[in-house]
Length: 180
Image (cartoon, rainbow, N blue to C red; front, side, top):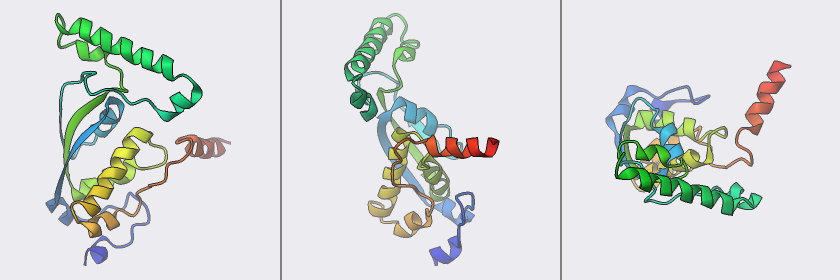
């Protein structure tokens, strides 16, 4: 019945009907601040977050380590944390501005199944940043497996689970071809 209701979705812009607004999901996320900033932009969700601090640690991208810049990256993260701590006592509202986007923060996202289809398909696209792509793909998995809503997870036919080597390279090549 759900498959018939959803129908054939030729692209991710073909949205399922409003009946999907009756099912809600709530996710407790610990992820980097940069991914949070992108995910929080979605209008049809409720998001609550803890204050940004360096206390949850940071995520070092694999490419940074592979490039040999791991030590320099870690040093920059340490300086960010030290600046936060130095500012905190006198400037508690401003101190979070010293925290690098690679640091983790904890937040809760709540949205309905209709918004899940929109957001998770959009944020799992190959052009997306790996940090929020991982969050979107994991949310999709949890909807199908932990919540047991396999039919709803299956309705998300435009989820991209494989990670491309260079996220934006293919889209940039296509844009360049259009310009020519």
